[in-house]
Image 1 (cartoon, rainbow, N blue to C red):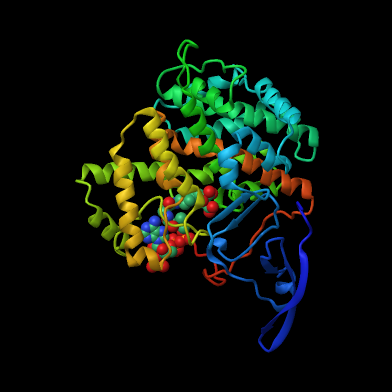
Image 2: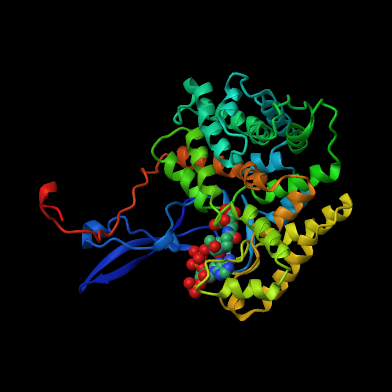
Length: 435
Ligand code: SDX
C-alpha cells in the first residue's frame, strides 16, 4: 500500500517538573515510531533540542525508505538493487514522482514530454556569458535553475497542478542542457541542440561533448550513467531534500525550491563529497599513496581532515549504493579498457578503514560518494562536474518530495524555534561613551 495514514499508537507520557504530559504517538508501514510534540511548548514551555535534526522527523513520506542499520534503500517499495538492475533513470523518475512504475504508454509519453520541453530558451541561455570562465558549475546551475522560472513565470503557481506538471517536465527536460551549458561555458563552447529519440543519459553525454553532432556514446557509458543517476535519485529527508521542502513550505515555486536544494547539495559534507573524494585520492596519490598516514589523519581529532566518502548520518552499515557503484567501477573500467590507479588506492583505503577500530566503532562505511567519482572519471566527466551529476540524479527525488508536500496540503511553513543564549536586555550607548 502506498501513502497510507500512520497507525496511531499509545500516547507517550513525558514528565517535566513533576507534571506529566501526553503526546500522541504513531508508526509507519515499516514500524518506525514517532510521538508528536506539537502541543508540548504550549503545555510545558519546553521545546525539544536536536542538533542537526538527527532524531527529529518533520514529515511522513511514502517516497523512499531507508533502513540504515541493515543497509536497505527502496524507492516506493522497490529495492534499489532491482531498480539498478532493470530500470532506466526516466522510469525511476516517474516512479518517484507519481508513485508507481510507468506503463509503456506513460513512459513513451513522459519521454516525449521531456524531449518537447528539453530546449532552453536561447535568450535565457545567454545568462551563461555573465559567469567567469572558471565558474563552479554548481553556482551556475543554481542561478540557471531559479532563473528558468522567469522564462515561465506565469506558470509557476505551486497551487496549480497544471503549472506543476509543466514545471516538472521543463526542469527534468532542460536540466541536462543547463548542466552541459555550465561545463561548455568554462571550455569556451556554446550549447549544442539535444539529440532526439535517444536515451536521456545518451542525450546528456551528447550535450556535454558533441561538437558537430557526430558524437556517439558507447552503450556501456549510457548503461553506467543510468545506474549512477538511479542510485542518486532520492534518499528521504537528507540535507538538500529537507532544504527543498523547507523552501517549498513557504509556497515558493518549484524552480526556487530546487535551486535551494542545489546549493545545499554543493557542500562537501553532502553532495560535494564526490568532488572532495577525488581531490583527496589525487592528493594521497601525489603524496606517495601512504594509506596509514591517511587513516591516522582521519582519526586525528586535531586535524580537520576527514576520510571523504566515508560515514553517514543514517547508514551505520554499508550504504547499498556504494556496494553497487564499487561493483560497477570494475565493470565500467574493464569494458571501457580504462585503468585508474585511484580505484586501487580507494579499495586499499576502504580495506584499511574497515579494519580500523576507529571506523568500526563509529560505524563509518563508504557512502555513495566514495567510488562514484572513479566512474565519472572513466566517463571523461571532469571533477568539477561530479556534484552537478549528483544534482542531475537527485532532481526527480527533490521534485517527488516537493510534490508530495504540496499535494498533501497539510504542511505548515517550516519555522524551527531556538534557545536564545545571547545578551539579556541592555540600554543603547552613544558612540561617545563606547570604549
Ligand atoms: C551524502 O543524508 C543523506 O542521505 C546524504 C546522502 C544522500 O544521498 O542524500 O547519502 C549523500 O551526503 C553522503 C555523505 C557524503 N559526505 C561525506 O562523505 C563527508 C565525510 N563524512 C562526514 O563528514 C560525516 O560522516 C557525515 C557528514 C556524512 C555525517 O555526519 P554526522 O552524522 O553528523 O556524523 P558526525 O560528523 O557527528 O561524526 C560522528 C563521529 C565524529 O567523531 P566524534 O566527534 O564522535 O569523536 O564520526 C567521526 C566524527 O569525527 N566521523 C569521521 C568521518 N565521518 C564521521 N571521521 C573521519 N572521517 C569521516 N569521514
